Image (cartoon, rainbow, N blue to C red; front, side, top):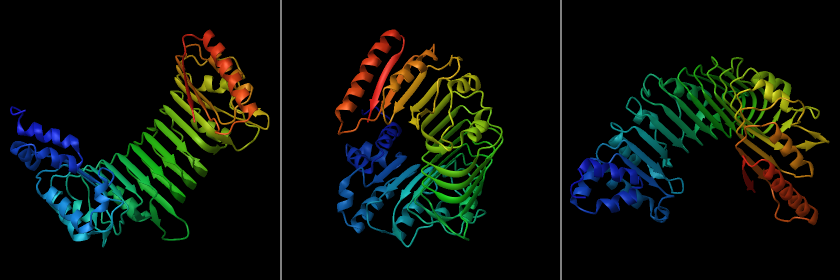
Length: 419
């Protein structure tokens, strides 16, 4: 250990991340203390890492963090996550940021202060590449002054911001590639809540727990779009057909438009969603390069709508991963086995149920026959704690049917996941 360069020791300590572990390790010897002071590049303070943080007074905690940060030089990644702690002094937090901002590349910040600390004003115009803000307020963005020339990833969780300031903030990040919005508090300027964002460099957008009248996203280079637990009346993506991965999970939307040029789509993942199948199918049917398709707990606007395997097989010839949940409503199976075309390239098949019946095992075998090159089968099931005799019999019959079926498909690797 004595032969290790002090820079290497600094790199080792940086991989510990948690400030408490770094401080303990740095007490090993003088050389390790020197590495901590001069060559430490990553430091994290989190109330989840060490529960004692929550038992200390705010003043004592501020002193500990201040002493630790001010003993370092050249920090590149700083994480201060104190969501379970009382409000800090704004002047103290400002001092931490002013001390580190010249070298900082990553900032993960979840600190309650009184008054609010203007992160944009302190850290703008520097070398920050990743900014993760939570439980903060952003007011009056000045894109010419509060500019982030190097920022590639922006995450806002439980942040209060107006629609205009959000648009200006994205505009102030000319190299932004990743945008995450989690339960933001959008300040209303009029009766209709509308967000319009525009960026030519965005590649990935994740939006969770947001309620809006209208969301318009203009991003020519967007490759991944994930909407989760949202309530939207109107959502439109304006791009140039770069979208590759599209995921919707528990979203309510009246009008959905992801553009006409979707030929490059490789993944479509829809769950807990009500869709008008003809419109949705028309939207993705031109995605002939689709490799992964997941339709899970999907409700159809029209009770008589059926998605047959023939349609999936002919429209998506390169499909390699197919996931479907078994759903029978009003006597209609929403994923029928009509047609004769095989899913030649499907190697992973995921099937599941929420309510099982006698037909499920027959449906599984019907799909197995349509996937001649299948390598892996995953069965997802929901098993209630209180089971009647009939439910136990049904599960037993299914187990027996699956054992017999797998004897005929010995080349397939079966997996079962129950919840």
